[in-house]
Length: 248
Image (cartoon, rainbow, N blue to C red; front, side):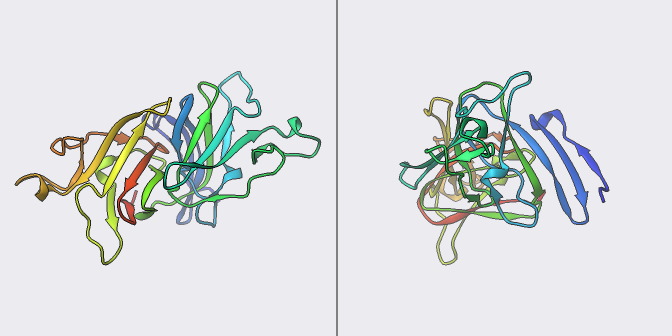
């Protein structure tokens, strides 16, 4: 039974409906995404499961408009930056009778079978302006450490609320030692050009009085940035490790 409904504030820059059922928080979020290229990730997980089925990520058209096949494309990249897969949102009626709307392989006939792990981001190309992605399911509000592979990976804020960059902590695997510059967060614009780069630096490597944290490229200026719900970024990691998010 639904016990509590929560409406999100405008600060979320998204439409959210949440419902607390026992210990679980279930609901949905419409996350507005910019036109052209961006990094995205689901802010909800499938109910009763870890991660989210790609088919449960739904494009939402701008008010008064319709979505056409191919307007949304999810692109997956490997650790070296090479594209490994591309999935398009296709309307079933554009294929043949009996086909559902959904994410399809490049042949536009084979439904994609893929589950994104919690915190696993993806690159999105969106041809229209003002559209959204809808995520639905349950919220993981516990402290969570998201795996980060060596070299390049797509990551982001998996929470349905904003998160300060300084609250996202890199952690290396047991037996290893975290060093300044091991983790770098890279921000890219809608054309794919890099617009910012932030390194995690140990304060002792700068000077007395400096704290561990994310710093600008000068390694002296702490980064002031808040990631919106579902806002993605790229990570370059010199080591296998994790990004640790505090509990909600």
